[in-house]
Length: 485
Image 1: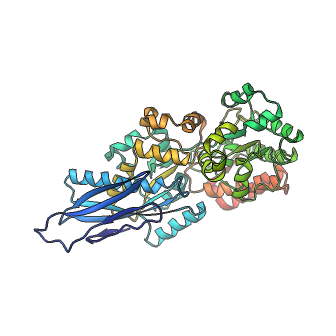
Image 2: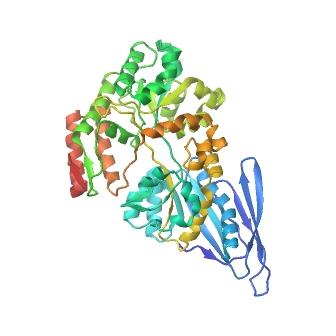
Image 3: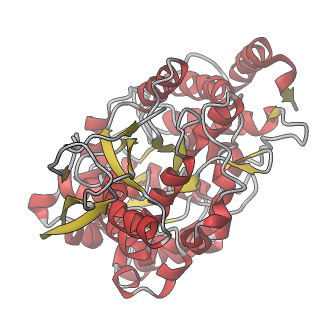
């Protein structure tokens, strides 16, 4: 969208942490000296004030950035763009470009579906923000519909992007073209309560070695269910509290399908629904309920009760995101010692190998990316600001606050990052990572697939019946864009 202005007095409004740009003066004339814009940036524990000169005949460009972020722990998504403005303007000045840039941010944490709808409606109305920070999986739909910019041929103009871990670019691609810049990475591990395993009779050596046994494939998904059932029968945890998945539809359920050996994306671009793999997943979910290790009401979408259950030690095993460690430390167990309490009582490792499937440990990453709207007239300035936010200093600060993992090669030997215990212990899990496909059809596929999961947990269908229902829905909704295998 067009965000150009020659205004000489401005205030950048934010819905999160502050960046205030202010300048005084009258309209430019040929002999008027350069205007000075005061940039005040709040950073952790300090306030930095920088003076930026706007040439008398120059152009001041305002970019709007829209970021989905949890309060306090993820606000670096947009705040780092604000902080990148200073270096962006310095580079413009050094290159002789008479433009200067400011960023207005809109940052809060709506539901994922609401965020997606908001951006799509704004794009349809020609009022989209210039930069949007959202889940990279949206690229499949947004790139296909033309509402985000293909930046493939411009990435090389910004040397900061050379530092991004190469494998992460795959999350921004559709048909071998790039439609965004990686912003963060994460893993989705198995978490377990050390104290509950000790109560069950595990030795300290057995507890301490569990992450390695998960990574080697020695301790399997089936072993985890056996341990969970034993804990329920022994009264260590209540019935239904042996193992918990996330409480609603979401990316995590995809690695169940991958673990069962399911294929997802055909060379033609069509999605695949592997009925044998799906049936294994549905059998697993039904088995968890039948063995009393999972509540038949657990997929109720109630994140509050779910977080309380896992954070306060009521659940033995659960699957969750790396970033949720930061949530538990800050919002749930801060009074108990925060991260120190978690390290004392909670361990983690890759999702265990499913012996009846691929028999290989697994995880999934659903990274966020900065994407540039097709509406903007200033793609180069948007990428410039993004590049200045993509530094080891800023990305590390954001990663440590949010429980995310670094995205830059230079962070491998950057002391503030390498000395962070959680990131250091979590990073090896990415060895087992998978991605969601960037396909415009994936949302419909995922919704249908999840129907089967929900039906098994609630006891409404058998695994065979669930497969039949899902196949019918996929064929009705996707037609030739899905292959039933």
